[in-house]
Image (cartoon, rainbow, N blue to C red; front, side, top):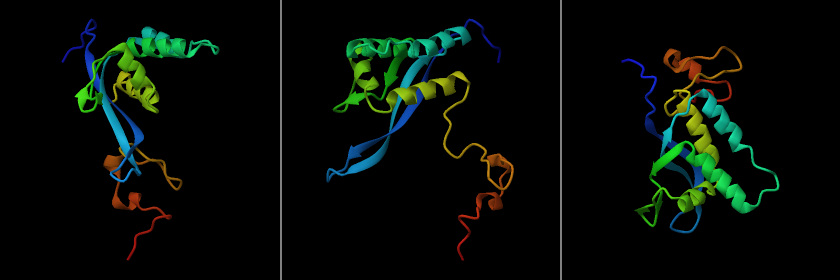
Amino acid sequence: MSFDLLDKPLIYIPVKWPGLKADDNGDAVAVEHTVDVQIELLDVDPLNDWIAAGGALAEDADAAARADHARSTFKAVAKEWRGVVANGKSLPFTDANIDKLLQVPGFADAFGNAYLKAWSGKAELREGNSAGSPANGPAVEPSDATPKDAISKSNPPQN
């Protein structure tokens, strides 16, 4: 497959972040929220500008200015979404709905992290799929690991 220098595909990336919801008794239950966001992968210089713009808001900005700034930064790379719902119905990708989603605790940071992983060519990274660095030896790639590598002194096998 050849590389097309002019190809600027729009791709969907999963954005996942932890949260809480109420169970049937009203008790908090930990959940992992997920939405798919369609993004444009920026070239290097526009990416650096985007990152700089994300932090370029005056400290004394009011709430409306902060919301406008967050929305414009998000929309510079995000073009659509899937999985954003209210009462079981999909919500359109509008400024008002973007403002609401950006206020959800954890979403904005999760989006930034997911975007940068996608930008660097990494598909979704799942916990435990990368090499560890045990205190008593070198890191081991998961494909090279043996059962003994998974046993630590703090968690010995039980007989």
